[in-house]
Image 1: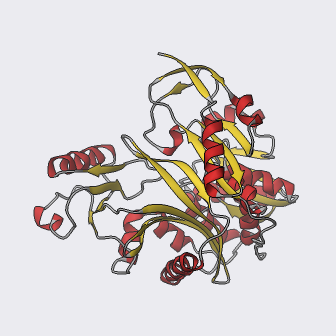
Image 2 (image 1 turned 90 degrees about the vertical axis):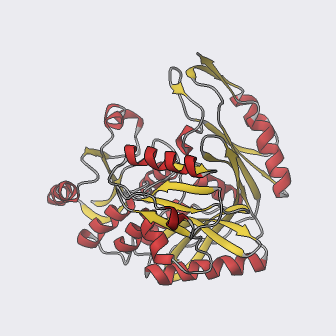
Length: 405
């Protein structure tokens, strides 16, 4: 039985769409999860043919389950993850059970922001930074090596805007460091320069060390208690100079991390002095990313990534070119969700491709402290990015969350 094992999934978004793609391609799908809620909601995961409750941080426990599956006749074709912090483990298991030319070591570096910064230190696109090892005290002399405030403070394993804070003065910097130390005493902390400029996300796959860019997406950031990305504009046409400069950065990363095969996305800011790297992740972005790229270009990036993991050549041939904008919906007060209105009105508006609302009635909602606190999105397409953006924002305004305080 041709089988693909997935290490973790979210209920929706790119990681779930990868499982659906595997089923569509004719594979038996197995999900390793440490999420008890998913076990209880087993019936809602019809595309998962077998769900196994296991500690997804424990390689030995997962190896035992894989050997058990093999003994039952499963032909493990690949082991994959599209979820934060699980990618390196999935690639380590691949190296043991189904080698595919991917590098667990490269994924491990990318999952650890301190490792990434250290590896790329000194390159033109790498920002100035310093790393505080666990329990290490902040020395004033070391801050002198950084530009003036504001500074960014973050946990070395931060993902989805969690534990990424802005410090505007020394007192705030010390407070943020203390807070992060209390939350994760064994975790390193990165302090880095605040970078001005438009922020872009670049999705790419690497096959035989050759890079294919899947999409260049301009991001809109909402500044509150955290930096939350609430808007994504897919460029149907990327200016040649921009594309060439992005390729230079990607080629440098692929060489530095020795990536033969793999998927990644980078977030960068475009400054007066060129690109500055915000972060790298060894997977496609979550949320609506796969669907917005499909609306823009017609290919299915998670499906092509699976083909890459299966030893095939991924194909990112564009079937069409649409400017696409995705607007996320966040809220500004805390409460229990009573109902959501406006979904159908939003769907009927011109240019709207998809409307998605995540929470169910009775869920506790709150203003965003991470990307996980974005509660709905609208994808719209248009003949220009400005038109797509306007259509998406207009439709998103129709969606209202009614809360009980």
